[in-house]
Image 1 (cartoon, rainbow, N blue to C red):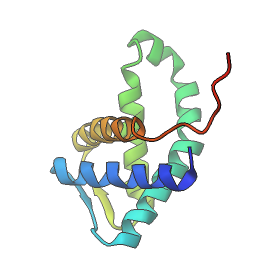
Image 2: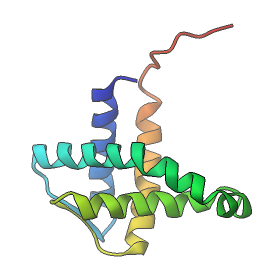
Image 3: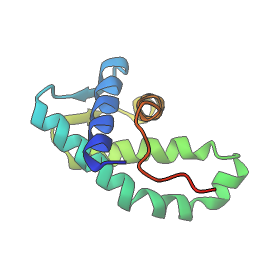
Image 4: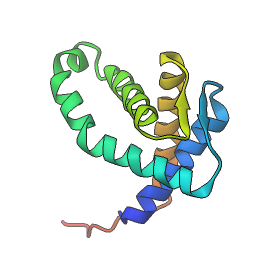
Length: 119
């Protein structure tokens, strides 16, 4: 998937989380949203695989539900790094992680995959 499309999907998903979850605040400036989406993408690309690897026993024990905690932590790390994006607590981060996951999944359904289909 194109990097700009992925950035736009992250931006819309983070805006939706800020709109739907009371404890998440994101500044409405265009460049602030783009910056927060870029930070969120870098955090997910660099830190999330390490967190998933280190929490494999918890993931197996909870049948994958611990991924929600990892996603909430990624939102918290993004809020810690990026100015203009605030998460008030862990509960808000969990709800925000659910919103971001659902919105980004739904928007990804409308984007064609660039990989060719192999038989």
